[in-house]
Amino acid sequence: MGDLEALGRLEKRAAAAAGPGEVLMAVLTEALRQGRWASGAILAPEGRGHLRVICSSGTGYEVESLVRVGEGPVGEAAAKGTSVVSLGDDGAGGRSSLAAPMLIDGRLVGVLALTASSGRTFSDNDRLVLGLFGECAAPWVDGAVSAVRHAAIA
Image (tube, rainbow, N blue to C red; front, side):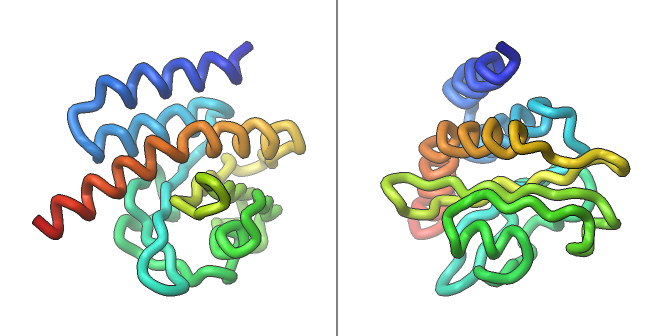
């Protein structure tokens, strides 16, 4: 039941958001609340072969930093189009992390990256639920990223 409640909250908060930044924060906040995860970020494709952190909460994800597609859990999730769990040996301070791609019709629109508190890990159920959450959040993230890029061009 809690899994569906997070999706309902996401829909309400994103629909009521005043701008793209609020949409992204709604997506990230609801993902973090899903399992009371320690920190997280949303990354969007940037040019050829990179992802840029466009929204973050907590430590470990600096906004505007770049990740190369194919490198580390986040880059691997983007390259393979499937969720990747790291058990703490990826530089996240020894903490477990999960990276879930957000896809629309097979097109990567972003990656949801979450880090667990020390001593916690991501279960198979967490991976499944957060993967589904990422699928549902993908259109919101895509719209927010498009709005920001369109405003930068105008």
